[in-house]
Length: 468
Ligand SMILES: [Ca+2]
Ligand SMILES: [Ca+2]
Ligand SMILES: [Ca+2]
Image (cartoon, rainbow, N blue to C red; front, side, top):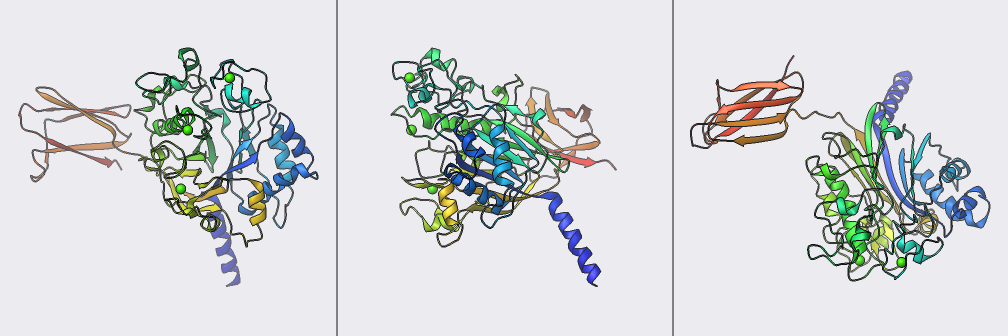
C-alpha cells in the first residue's frame, strides 16, 4: 500500500513537471543612473546598493517561475549583469527563501540610450553625449546611456536564441495607418520627414523568443512599450505606446502582419496554430491612466489571445485608487500618482490552458510586503499554464472567388486529410454533395471549382475526414 501511494505520488509529480509551467513578468527596476552602476551593485552583494537587488531576488525565489522576463535591467554587451544577478543573488537564498538556479538566460541590445543623432524631443539641438535627460530624449528610446532599462529572460527550459526574431530596428513609418505624429493624415506634425525616416517603433526592443518546453515550442513575445506620459499635446509617447502594442496584434494576424520585417530582413507574422505568451510591462491599463483609448484592448480582445482569467493580488485591493474603474486587485503597478494594471502575461488560446493567474502583491500585514514594496514600483505577475496538444486546423485561410460560371474555393489544408464539400441554396434545405465538384490538394493547398451557372445563391460546407 505504502509503495503504491509512494509510486502514485511520484507519477503525479512526474506528470505535473512535464507539461505545467509557471511564466512570470516582472519590471524589477534593476536600472541605475549611469553605465556600469548596476554591474557595481551586482558585484558587491553586501553593500547598501545591493539591498534592492536582494529584494527582487527574494520575490523571484518565493514565486519560483520557470520562465521569467525582467523589464528594466540595464543591458551590458557581455551579459555580465544577468550572470552576476544569477550567481550573487538568485543562487543565494534571500530571507527565508531557497536559492533558485536558472539554466538558461537571454538578453539583447535595447534602443534605450542609443544615440540617434536626431533632435527627437524637438529641444532645438540633437544631443549625442550620454549622461542626461537631454540625451535620453533624443535617443531611439528614452535612456541616459546605451542599454538603460533593458530586458532579460531567465528560463529552466532551453532558449532557442537561434530562432529569435528581433524587431529592434523596425521603423514606425513602415507600420500602415500608424499613429506616427508626422503631420500626415491630420496627425500632429511632431517628427519631420528626416526624423520619421529613422524613428524606430520599439522603445526598447520586441523579441519573438522561442523556448523549448519538453520538445514543444513556446514563443515569448517580449516588449516594454514606452510609458504614454512625459510628452505634450501631440501625445507622441501615447501614440508610440499604442503602436508598440499594435505590433504584436498585427504579428498575430498573418494576413495583416505582412508588413512586419525583423532585423534579419525576414517579413511576416507568427504562423497560425502556434503557442505563444505575450509578456512584459506594456504600460497600458484597460481603463485608467494615460494610454490611448483601446491600446491594451488590441491584445485583450485579440481572437488568438486568452485574456482571462485576469491575474489578481490582495495588495492591489488594499492599496486601491477608489476613483478607478477596474477591479483594483488587477493592478500591477504602485505609482506615486495612481495604481495601474501595466504588466501582462497573455497566453495563446492555442495549446495552453491557464490553471492560475496571480499578481504577487501581498497585503501589508504579510512578512514579504516590505520586500515587495522596496524592490520595485511594479509587481511580479505570473500564470500557471499547462501545455496542451495543438490541434492542427484542417481548414484555414478559406477564401471564395466567384465569377459568372464558377466559384473557386481555396483553403490551406492538412496532409492525409480527405475533404468533402456540400452545398445548399438556403440553409433550411438539406446539404447536397455536388458530383461535379473536383478537389485537388497540392502541398496542403486545396483548390475547388464548382459550377454556379445558376444565379441563385449557394452556401458551401467543407468537412474534413482524417484518413485512417
Ligand atoms: Ca534634443
Ligand atoms: Ca501622452
Ligand atoms: Ca485600472
